[in-house]
Amino acid sequence: MDKLDNYSTKFIDWLVTFGPKLLGALVVFIIGLYLANMVARLVSKALSRRRIDISLQSFLGSLVSVGLKILLLISVAGMLGIQTTSFVAVIGALGLAVGLALQGSLANFAGGVLILVFKPFKVGDLIESGGQTGHVQEIQIFNTILLTPENKTVILANGGVSNSTIINYSRHGNLRVDITMAVAPDNDIEKVRRVALQAIDANRFVLKEPAPSVNVIKVGDGMITLAIRPYATPVDYWDAFFTVQEDVKNAWDKNNVSGPVPTRVIINK
Image 1 (cartoon, rainbow, N blue to C red):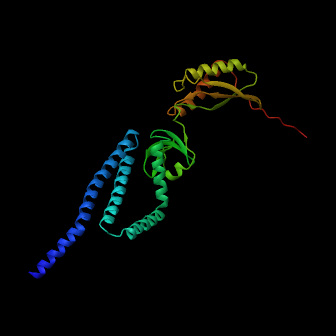
Image 2: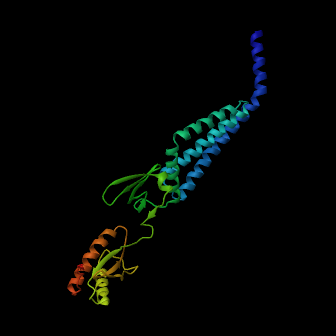
Image 3: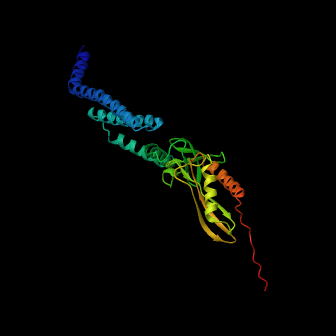
């Protein structure tokens, strides 16, 4: 009985001394857990309003939630009298080690976040980056996947994409098709231009606005070289590139516009 009374007395003393701390820590933990979940939901809603990629919404929401809960546990442990200095140091050292081991992957992850947040391009856009050109098939957290005009799948690391020049051919909505063709120097330039523009206007892949142009860029070497510049949507670019040349050539033939004849001057010494 004496031992039982002794244990009871010690328990009561411990409860009186430690009970308020335990109760306070429990209250802080419950309130902090509620606030952490609420902040995570607010972050997810804010990302959703900005139309951030759904996978990034989920990841960032979970990251915020886990980070706040770790801070909450450290705070509660400190309230209970647990020394958290060494614990925080261990977490910091572990984070540093993981960061050094995965620095390449972390760079790609950071690049993916920047791409998904700032949207320099979207799925379906025709872009050029890292010496590769293709339509964007998928934007992942670590990689961007392109499909080239040759139907080759190119996987680009997001770290390199976000830190390099990105040319987005689809952002403006149309592309200028650069074509160079030549005619004989004895042709009437105004007639050549008129016939070419009529053929271009009839091409179904060419946009009406901006208007196409036909201009002389060089006279020499036995020919007149013309810069033919119609506009097309990114999807119709190559169809316009090939069909415009064929249409203009056929129109010139029908209107007696003669083509260039290569000449060669031979000097005997």
